[in-house]
Image (cartoon, rainbow, N blue to C red; front, side, top):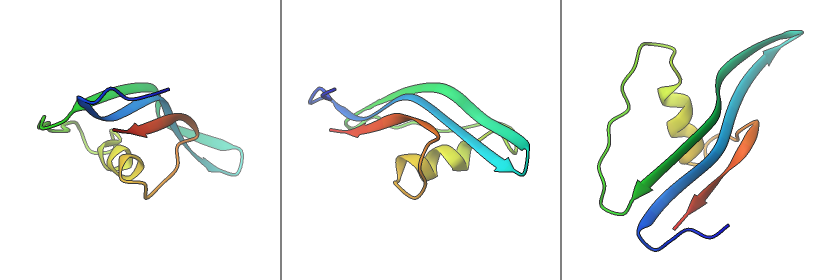
Length: 72
C-alpha cells in the first residue's frame, strides 16, 4: 500500500493487546488513522484509553498485534 504525498502517517487496522498468562487486555482493535502533512491533532481520552500506546506505536517504540503503519 502506498501513502499519498499529502499523508504523513497512515495506520491501518491497528490492534494492541497485552497478555498476562491466560488473560488478555485489548487496548484497541481495528484502529485506522490518517494524519496529513502539516496537520495538528490532539489525542484526548480517559486514563487507560490507549493514548500513550498509540503514540508509542506511531513512533516505532512498540509493535502492534495486528495492522500496519505507513509513513509518507
